[in-house]
Structure formats: C-alpha cells, structure tokens
Length: 462
Image (cartoon, rainbow, N blue to C red):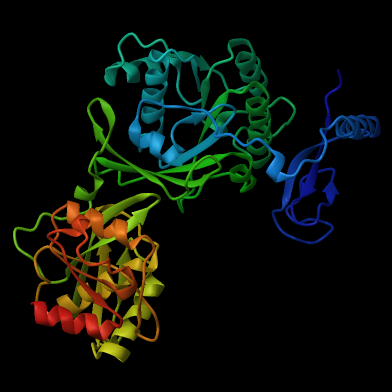
C-alpha cells in the first residue's frame, strides 16, 4: 500500500504547503506550519460519505429531561489522595493527562496505582517508552512491590501499542510518555507537535471505543506547562499537574480539568523510601511550627477544590531604597501591589519606602482573593514588629474601596479552623455564623466590614 503524502498546514489560516517553511506563504505568520497527511480525492469522498451514513443512522434528537443520566461507575485506585483528584477513581473509557517536572514522582505514583488495581483484580498495562522493562522491574522492587503482576510493554510505535490494547483489553493502561510515541503515518520525529497530537487522538478514540481507561504522561516546558499542542488538553477528560519542590518530600497533584469530578482539587503526598504515601492532614504541611507567635505571620483558610486547608502567610517588611521591591511566592504579585495601595489609602499603613516580601508556606499556590485579609494583616504585623495573637486566623477578600467581602463556603473554613484548635478569627461580616453554633465552640469570631476595622481590632486584641 502506498504511503500517504505529507503536507504542511498552517495553524492560523489553514493554508497548505508541500514543504515546511518558516513563514506561512498565505498569511505570513511565522512557525505555524505543522505536518499533516494529504488525502486523495477518493479518500475525502469515502470519509465524508461514511460520515453522512453514520449521521443517517444516528439516534433521534432527545431533550435533556428525557435522557436517563446516571453517575459514571468509578474504580478506586487504592490511593485515597489520587482518587480525590480523579473524582472518586478511574472511569471506564476515560483519558487522563498527567504532567510534571522530571523526577518528581509521576511514574512512581502510577506504578503504585497500577499495582494496587492489579491486586484488586483489575487487568493493567504499563507502556514504557523512556525506560526498559528491567528498569521498571527494579523500580517496583525499590517500592516494595514484590511479586507484582502488572503487565509491562516497552514500545513506542503507536500501531503496536493499539494492537496490544485491543488484544489484552486492560482496565487501565499507562502510556509513559506520550512524547515518545510515534506513528508510521507521519515522517516527523517522536515528540513533535504533529506526532503528539496524532498519537493522542488515536489513543483517545481507542479508549472511548474499547472502554479502557488510558493515562498519558506528558512532559512539561520550562514554564511548567504541558509540552506539545494545547489541543492535547482539550482531547482528554482529565488534566492533572504534579507539583512540588524536588528538594522537599511533599508533592501536590492538582486537577486542572476534570469532566468526571471537581476541578482545582488537590491530593497531597509524601515521598518515602517505599514511594508516595497520602497525607491525611495536609494542613500540617503548610503551617510552620512556632513555639510563640512571630511578627509577620498570619494563618488563613483556603479552599482547594472541596478541601479546606490552613496555610500560613508570612510577610517581611524591611527598609528599601528609592525603588522598593514587592516580591511574592505562591501569591499573585500584581494583587500584592494593589493590596499595599489599599492598605495605605484606607488604613493609613504606608509601605512606599519599604521592601515587601510575602510567602505562602509549604510551596502551595493560592489564587483565590480570600487571602487578601491575611496578607494585609501579616504585612501590618511585620511593619509594626508585633505578632498577631496566638491561635489567630483570618480570611476575606478586600476591595479597592477598603471593604471586606465574603469568601465562598466560609462556614466550612471556620469549622476546619475550630477543629484544629484555633481560638480567634477575623472574618467578613457575611461569613459570620449564627450564635450558639456548637460547631465553632472554642473559636471567638469577630466579623468586620472594612480593612481599617480589622486592623483596629487586631491592635486591641494584641
């Protein structure tokens, strides 16, 4: 059979070229030509005729109210934190994309999950394109997975992988990694945009047709985003990011997209000699152990998916030069500049000649505005050189007019703080619970409406 002819298509205008060019000859855009397969007129005719035939046999149009919607059956992986991020477990026919820095633990976690599923009676397959079968076996022994019956395939050719999936019919298959897989239909090298997109599309179709759950491991760029075409994230059902400092023992798995569960859910793991273990109380990671309160430290309650987490916000205000610096780790730097302006205008706390450094302890990233109040109180505490009261927490969004706005699910945040033994809280007035609620016993809650009111209250408490 003759090999299909290769052409190059522009991602911007859709124009084609018989050879690769740095600039598209149609729209003059640079670096937009990607490899594609040229179809003959007979192939196009057959493809469209088959599409029309399938449309003719399609089911009748149905209203949403008449569709019998049932929850997708989920198979637990044996790791509670991973199941939390996935939305309860793996789904039949689901496609999961997981990315992270090299050596952070992606392969380790997936190998542990496959072993747990295999021991629970599920058929599993680990397709490795970066390591040999012997290397995978050595890792499994280091992890204490003696006698593991996980099936391993060392292969990078897409057609052979699809044939193996069709023959074995596993419950779950891991492709480690999608950047190493290539198809004979394309002449470009493995890892190129065309190869990654084409291979991911074929694997996704195979998963939907056979009911096999496929997990794709993806490389990341220097900026931490998944490498390859952006369309890769749109093809799959779930996108997970593996985060954490390789010098720290803690790892975070964050769900960026999930068609079968909540987004922005996180799972917390600790790297041990026997692999990754779930952390039952992740709030302990993000709280520093101070024997006594220190200036510039304020604890807040943030939400990560459905889980409330207590995170310590640390601020350091020091004398600066004519161009003071504003640096933040784990928080939005632009929002920090805005909060300093609000603090000056509405509370009379001036930092225009001071360097301001803000850090979220434990490497967690906080994107929600509910951290505003804690950040401002930590800055004011560092500037005054006076610590906040012991057992103190705060959360709430602060607007440009100085008002303190409510945070979503404030009652759950306060219950988590009370459960962990905190005694004093400053919260937005709309988040204040009803009186005599036993869920908040031992926690004194002060409701505020403006930032200057919160600062005056902290001075009176101190």
